Every structure is written in structure tokens, then in C-alpha cells.
Length: 129
Image (cartoon, rainbow, N blue to C red; front, side, top):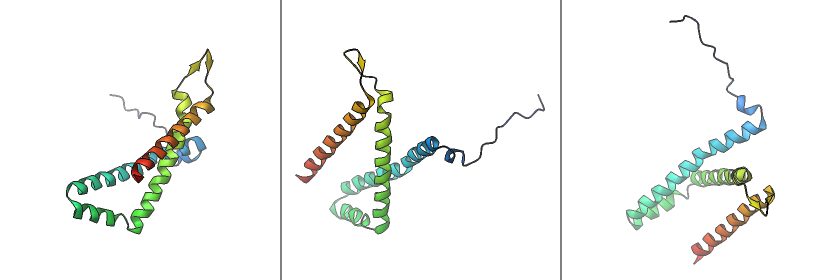
């Protein structure tokens, strides 16, 4: 067995803050923590709904706490940031060709935003009924 130590490259803990690309990437990946917690809160609400009206109303009342409201705004901001960055990556994942020409990236991205807006309006319409 060799007594040599293997080379270990030292990496500072703030390596991702030195370039904007990596900073945006780490923020996007870190946002998943807030989205996961938000999903668990909604799952808890479904569980409380299955336990009856009193339990569900208690869950709804707990969401009116100022800390919960602030958390929901933070989760919304991260979800919107995640959506914007995801849509900007769409042209790299979708390689569309129409009549022998590659579709422009702006058309692909705007198509995603239009679909997002239509789905949002549809969901709001269904909720308001």
C-alpha cells in the first residue's frame, strides 16, 4: 500500500459566489428546499381535510400566522424564479425544426409563457366557479 497522500484540490466554500452563472444555479437548486416544504404543507392540508371539517379549519387558521404568510411569499418568489429559469432552458431541450429551419429560441420560450398563462387563467376560472 502506498504511503502517498492522494491529491485533494482545495475548494473554498464560497466557490459558487464567484461567477454569476453558478450563483444563479445554486439559488435555483436551493429553491427546491422551499418548494418541498410548501408541498409538505399542502399534503398536510389534504391529510387534515380527510380528518374532517374541524381539523381542516384548524389547518387553514394556522396558515394565517404571519410567519406562514411570509414563508408562502418566499416560496412563491422561488417558484417563479424556478419557472423563469426553467423556461429559459427550454430551447436547449427542445430542438424544433419547421420546414427545414430551426425554430427561434424566443418563440419556444414565449410559447412556454403563453401556455403557462393559459393554464393559470384556466385554473383560476375553475377555482372561482
